[in-house]
Image (cartoon, rainbow, N blue to C red):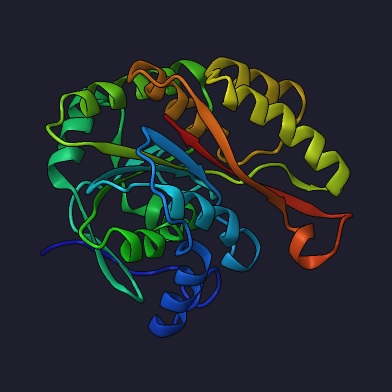
Length: 269
């Protein structure tokens, strides 16, 4: 029986009604007249009310291929630290998004530390909130979901190299979609300063530098481990440039500048 992962955060992080969801995604991502090819991107994963505009600006500017690897953080201490799902589909109010079984199998062979694990993915929102954007903008896409519960630099670099090896061997383009919010629950002023430190390392394509600055400066960037793995892969795949497409904090929506979360949208080419 084919595994179907049901939507866990529909109606909370994004609209649960299909028509409302289509309208929301179209409003957030449907206005860019020009599309660019990319090796990878970084998009946030908060509720669409807060981070949807940043994510939408990235997705709206991308030429999205049919094959995708989605990497995000595992927010909850359940399941494997290197968790993949390699068959079946994920459900959203817009229908089912199919896992690319061949690409997943290739990645598991290239990096055997990845573990098949439904538990780590079952309630995790960091990848789920990306799917409606992709369903609207690239309806025939297939993807491989990976969530990480480790920040060990050596492991992340090995994973990044494995992803690059697998992507380089494909006969068609594969986009790495990396999910992360930025600094959490400090003032808007502090968050913008801390986020700039991390963003500068990302724009330099400096995976180790990002790992170091997040840890040394106390930047609570929840998805920095996936971004380190992505930057490693992107450099292996020949990336030469990263562009900050959009940046915001939750204060831009809520008006509360004492207790915010930062959001960055980046394209890597």
